[in-house]
Amino acid sequence: MNVLLLGSGGREHAFALSISKSSKLGKLYINPGNPGTDTLGENVKPTLKTFREIKDFCLEKEVEMVVVGPEAPLVNGIFNEFITDPETAHIAVIGPSKEGAELEGSKDFAKQFMQRHDIPTAGYKTIRRDNLYAGFQYIDSMKPPYVLKADGLAAGKGVLILDDADDAKRELASMLGDAKFGEAGNKVVIEQFMRGIECSVFVLTDGHSYKILPNAKDYKRIGEGDTGLNTGGMGAVSPVPFVDDAFMSKVERQIIVPTVEGLKKENIIYKGFIYVGLMNIGGEPFVVEYNCRMGDPETEVVLPRIKNDMLDLLSAVAEERLAHTEIDTDPRTAVTVVVASGGYPEAYPSGFSIQGLENEDDSLIFHAGTKKDSTRVLTSGGRVLAVTSLGKNIQEAREKSYKTISGIKFDGMYYRSDIGLDLINL
Ligand code: GLY
Image 1 (cartoon, rainbow, N blue to C red):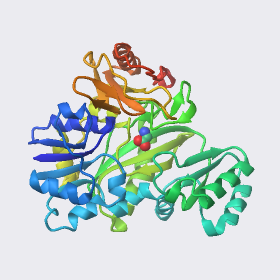
Image 2 (cartoon, rainbow, N blue to C red; image 1 turned 45 degrees about the vertical axis):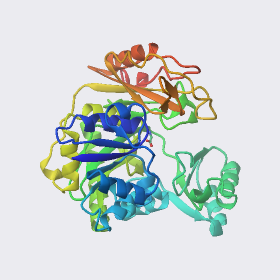
Image 3 (cartoon, rainbow, N blue to C red; image 1 turned 180 degrees about the horizontal axis):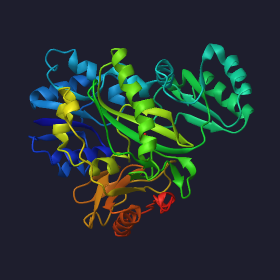
């Protein structure tokens, strides 16, 4: 089977690695990919930009499956585009329909969906430009801190948490009135703040049945001890020690089952991954957010723990046979540490040569923001690499990743040295 994988980050490198090991694989293409994925398949050149170009490429290369890494093509309707075109309807797209992708594409849709299906989440109110005053009243009725979420996709930047009511009102007005987050801020969801411990649960569904994948915890802040600005994620651990059977059975009963059933009841086609961001509040799960794709860097710890043939698993999704499949999980712990460009998540210089990539040792070095010139691999993004290791526990996996990182060098290189530390001896 020829496969086209869409995306260019560490998540896609991890997908490319799993797919490249499949006995079902013919040729793997990655659009646009990165220097890491290029060693496992063929990066498409020039990059395919439109759905028309992607469809034409799939027809020319006899691609039978498109695996979509990032959310944007899903929210923009790539699934519908393929399925409604008689020429491409036979090609499986792994990901939800445009309607299903609204779970991530519209925070307001996700909140209403959860309300309709009694899925536990924080209280909220959606505010449009014409009812700003109702937003101010809602803020006055709440206890701080105040959570403001731009409704649409905002590249992970559309969430503000504010301690002061006046600041919250000012920011709300700026999001709606001054289009601070562009179109993504046409509506703003104001949410009650949830205090607890965050973790992420990943579900693979064919729209009828579902499988729960290994869970993970992401480290979103740039600084040690979870301080400083939010990032796409500076590291991840899987499994999460506090996600025990009792908690998971609540997550499954109260969140996963009603989510999959809710999609089905609403005739929303969903054949892909659901990333459920959760808050554990005193042992009770609440949904923080849904994403319609796998997380990054969570994928870099989740996929290395899945022993199934990846294309067997994804074919079962496409053909609605998931009920007859079991997830074969590596019991070891995976830790990934993101190595970033100095300055990230604010402006940073790039184009620095990276040394030590050949010393992979016992780790997997996933490329995230890299590019190649004729002889060298250079930095080209904020998050540059994700270094994953497996071990019998968090300590062992951490040590291996940090040992591998000690052999990697580039100008301005930055990483957090405390990934997983908070989960040891819990
Ligand atoms: N690591 C967070 C995300 O992928 O959204």
